[in-house]
Amino acid sequence: MVFVKEEIEENSSEPEPWRIIKHEEQTDPMEENEESEELREVEEEHHVKPGEKPSSRSKTKNKFLKKRKDKKSFTCTQCGKSYTCKQSIERHMRVHTGEKPHECDQCGTSFTEKFYLNVHMRIHTGEKPFSCDQCEKCFTQKIHLKIHMRIHTGEKPYTCDKCEKSFRDSSHLKSHMMIHTGEKPFMCDQCEKSFVKSDILKIHMKIHTGEKSFTCGQCGKSFPYKSSLDVHMRVHTGEKPFSCDQCEKCFTQKIQLKIHMRIHTGEKPYACDKCEKSFTNSSHLKSHMMIHTGEKPFMCHQCEKSFVKSDQLKRHMKIHTGEKPYACDKCGKSFRDSADLKKHMRIHTGEKPVTCDQCGNSFAKKTWLEHHMMIHTGEKQFMCDQCEKRFTWRKNLNAHMKIHTGEKPFTCDHCGKTFNDTSNLKSHLTVHTKEKPHSCSVCGKSFALLQYLHKHQKTHTGVREYMCFECEKTFISASDLKQHERIHTGEKPYKCSHCDKRFSRSSHLKRHERIHTGEKPYKCSHCDKRFSRSSHLKRHERIHTGEKPYKCSHCVKRFSQSSTLKRHERIHSREKPHV
Image (cartoon, rainbow, N blue to C red; front, top):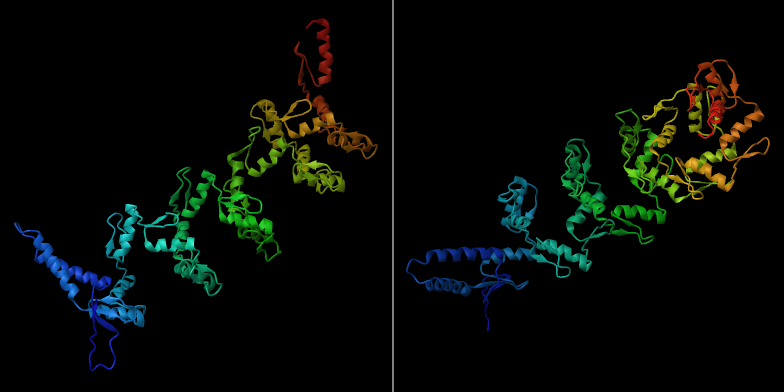
C-alpha cells in the first residue's frame, strides 16, 4: 500500500498545487543530473582501495539510493507527475501556467527556464562551444553535436516500422511517419494548404507575404530563403560542388545532379496518365500535361500570345524588345537564346553531334536529323490542299504553294527577274557575279553555292545513300532520286502554259518555255551574243577563250565540244575496228 501524507501549512489561505507523496518518484532530466552528481561524489568518497572488498562499494551505493527513495516526493495535482525537490515542481508548474519568467534582452523571447535562455543567447553572441573532432563543425547545443556525429559514424538508430527506412534523428522519423499516416497538421490560413512540418509552413507563408529578407551583396537580388541565396551565390563564384561520377558534369544543386543521373540510369519516374509518356522530371510532366488540358498560363502583354512555360514567354518577349544578348565571338552575330548561339557555334567548329543510324550522316541540330530521317521512312506529312502533293518539310510546301498563287516576291536587282524563293534568287545571282567561293579540296573544282559543293564531294567519297525501290539504282541526293522515280511513275508535274506539253523536271519546263517567249538570258561577255541555255553559252565562250577540255584517248588532239570529240574518235575506231 502506498502511504500518502498531505503537508499543507495551517495559516496558508490557499493550498499549494502539489502533494508530498512517499513512493518511487518520477524525476525530470535536470533532477536526474543532480542525483548523478551526488552519486558520483559518494562513489569517489568510498572508492575501492587496495585490499578492500568491492562489495563495500556496492553497499555504499545501495545506501545512497535507499536514502534518495526515502525522501519526500512532490506531485503535480494537474497531471500527476512527481519530483523529489520543490524547485523541480515549481519549474514544472510553468508548463500549466504558461509562465516564462526568463526574457532575452536582445529580442524579447521568453523561456520557462534560465538554462534555455542561456542556450538561446548563443544565437546573438554567435557562440558555438560544441565542436566536431571529425570536421571541426561547431554547434550551440551538445545534442546537436551528438546528432551530427551520426553523419560520420553512419548511425541511424530510428527506424520506421512501416517501410524500415532509418533516420539519424527522432524528429526526422516523426515527420517521415506522416507520409504513411497522411497527416499534415500545419495549415496555411491564407490558402488552406497543409504541411507536414511547421518550418515548411513558415517557408510557404513567404509566398503570401512576399518577404525576401536575404539579399545578394554582388547583384542586389533578393530571396525569401537563405538556402536560395546560398545557391544563387554559386552563379558569382562559379562553384559547382555536385559532380556526376558517370560523365563528370558538374551542377550547382544536388537536385540537378539527381535529375541528371536519370539520363544514365534511364529512369523516368513521372508518367502521364493520359498518354503514358514518361519523364525524368516532375516539372516536365507538369508542362506536358498542359498539352492535354490546353492550358497556357503565361501570356505576353504585348500581343496576348500564350505559352506553356515561363521561359518560353521570356524568350518570346525578346522579339518585342529586340534584345539579343548572346553574341558569337567569331562573326559577331547575335541571338536571343544561349541555346541558339550554341547551335550556331557548330558552324565555326564544324561539330555535328547527332548522327543518322541508317546512313551515318551527321548533323549540327537534332531537328535536322529528325527531318532527315523522313527520307528513310518516306514520311511526307505536309500536303498541298490544291493538288494533294505531299512534302517532307513545311518549308518545301510553303515554296510549292507559290506555284499555285504565282507569287514571286524575290527580285534580282541586276536583271529584274523574279523568284518564288530566296535560295533560287541566291543561285541566280551567281550568273551575274560569276563568283564561286566554294572549292573542292580533292579536285579544286569551284561552286557558287555550298550545297553544290557538298553534292559534288559525294562523287569522291562514293556515298550514294538514296536508293530507288523499283530498280535499286542509287543516288547522291534525295532530289536526284525524286527525279529518277518519275521515270517509273511517268509523272510529269510541270505543264507548259503555252502548249500543254508536260515535263518531269522544272528546269526542262523553263528551258522549253523559252521557245515560246524567245527569252535568251545568257549573254556572252566577249561578243554580246545571247543564248537560251547556259550550256550553249559555255560552249560558245570556248571560241573566245580557246579552251578545249575534251581530249582524244587515242591521240593528243583536243576539242571544245564533246560531240566533236565523239565524231573524231570514230576515225580511230574505223582504223582499229577490234579495239
